[in-house]
Each structure stands twice: as C-alpha cells, then as structure tokens.
Length: 431
Image 1 (cartoon, rainbow, N blue to C red):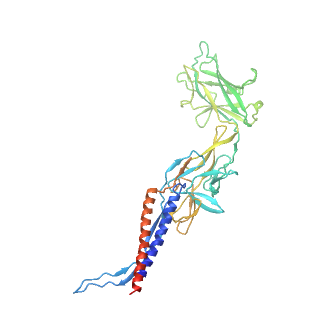
Image 2: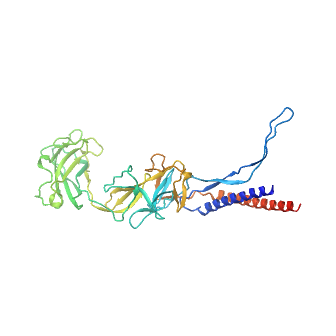
Image 3: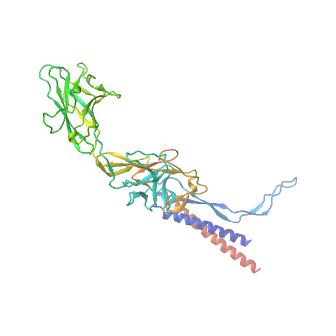
C-alpha cells in the first residue's frame, strides 16, 4: 500500500531530523568545556505480517513469513563518556577530571553534577561554577584538618584569610664544632643566631654561643641570649644544663648533662625571654639530633659549620592557592606556610548515560542513573583532579561532518520516497 510506504518515510524523516538535531548540537558544543557528544541510535518499528510461514511437507519445502516494516524510531541518544583533551590554563581554580566522576554543585537549591571545571570565587569567597553553582566538598578547620566523611557543603576561600603566628618552642641544631682535645689554644667560640617568634608573632633574635672549656677536653659551654642584650645579662640556659661533651674517638655527642628524648634526640631546656614578649610558661627546647644521625652535631677536625632552625613563624595572609589531584585546596600564606583550606568532592554513578542534561553544563539524576556515590577524588571508582587545567569537549568534528552527510542523504531519500508514494496514489486514483 502506498500509504504504508509514505508513513514509513515520514518516520524516517522524523528520525533523521532528530539525528540532524543531535549532530548540530554536537558541532555547536565543540568548544564547550566538559561537553560529551551524543550519538543517536535507531530501531525498526513493528513489521506488519503479510503472510505467515509454512512448514516443509513431503512434497514441498517450507516458506518463510512475509513481513513489511512500518518505519523507524529513535531508540536512544547515547552519550560518549570518553575524556576530552586537556588544556592548561594556569588558573588556580580550574580543574579537569581524569577518569570517572563529576563535580557536585548546588544550583537553585538542587544537587547537580558537571564535568565543567571552569571554576571561580565569588564576592563571598565561595567556590562556584561560572553559571553560579556552588561547588560542594568539605571545608577545612582553622588548623587545616579535613573530615571528608562528613556531609558535603559549599567551599569558601575568603580573600585575605590569615593564619595565626606560632610561638617558637623548639630550636634544632646541626653541623660541626672544631675538635678540641684540651691542649693548646682552644677554638674560637661558635655562634648561631636564630630568628625565633614570640606569641604575638614578633621576631626575637636569640644568639646561641658554644665556647670550648679550657680545662676539659671535648667539652663546650652553651649559652643563649637575646641579640643586643648586655654582656652581663644572664644566659637563657640554666648553669646546670650548660655543657655538652663529645666522644674523643668518634666525635659523637654524648648524653652527659643532656636530656634524652624518646626520639633519640638530646635536649637542653631554655628559658623563654619574657622581656622579649615570651610568656613565663613558654618553654624553648634546644634540640640536638640523635648522635650518629645525618644531621647530628659533631666534633670533628675541620671547619665550624654548626647552624640551627626553629619551628615558629609570624602570622600571614593568604597569597595564593592550588588544587591537588585529591581535590585538596592548599593555601600559601605570606609567612611561607601552607595549609589546607578545603577539599572538592566527586560523585560517581552506576550509569553515567542515565544522567539528564539540564543546561549550563549541569546534569541531574534520573531513574536510570543510580544515586550519586560522593567521596574524595581518587577513592573508590572516582577519578582524580588536575588543577590549572580544563577538559575540552570530546566532539570529533570529522565524525560529525561525516554523520551530517549520512543524515542529509537519508533525509532526502525519505522525502523522495514520500514523493514517489504520492505519485503512486494519484495513479491509482486515476485507474
């Protein structure tokens, strides 16, 4: 029947129009960050049986059924989940996802998901997508601790965030003092000047002096004073804990007169200089690495190389930040310190193709996507992040242009089938 062919051709036009729509959409989004190309899949409509099949007999063979198709329909639009190429941007808030997973965002009061990692910080310091979605993850505590077992929430990176000062409580020494066997002229005193920090973050210069004891071989007196203090100012080191002794054969520091620590280090407790802003309760430990260790204080013949370091620092303000592969946002402060500010979460799904595109690069769950499994990047089946990079669209323009020709030819062929069917109908009406 001519009408059957016409209806089949109409279904072909409709299906290929959808094919053209998807191709055009793919081409239009060839430069869209994180876009995933879609591919239209067709399936045949129910065939109408004209004649049934017959079984073979003794005198004749079997006959196959005769069925005529009634057209085509779009069965699905499959999303290509392959990763797009990566582009380095240098923007610290940009992230690309390598592997499985989606960024979690709160948009209009609803939880959405995206592969578009072009992020920014708004006027309130909130990490957002360019369309205003609030990126979800875990906020760090004031000391940089992150609990990624807690529910996710918005991440804040406030401009001008500060990190408080840390009082110096530990001074670590390392290096060599010239060998001294108690005869002849003793070596000149060795001094180490350290920039320590009081509770307010103000720098306090402390000078530690090692003086060879004239009457005792391999023994040095240790004193410590605030730089610029009078010569008569008392040492910050108690007289009962003011000498160190070395083994004359190995040059290693001996435990004599020192406090042994659980780590194997040796220590002298110094008094904190209250005149320089330290409190009476502050203890500063002068630490000597474990004898025999790489950085141990030694007494060998040769140059004087003793130096020191300490664990305090002044307050600082946030200068920059970066995002690690695990999604941790680490801030760098003006005092040279770093601290975690938060962590970005990723979501995985049982069926990524089941997600619904709701525009603005955002996806929503559906009945066939499964529920989001939210966790830290790099855990479970979730991929990792690349800071300062963006994932480009995975549209292959060569494939799209080839499909465009195929869809055009099929569309035109179906219109010709309609025209031919119409001519047949007119001819039949004239009979």
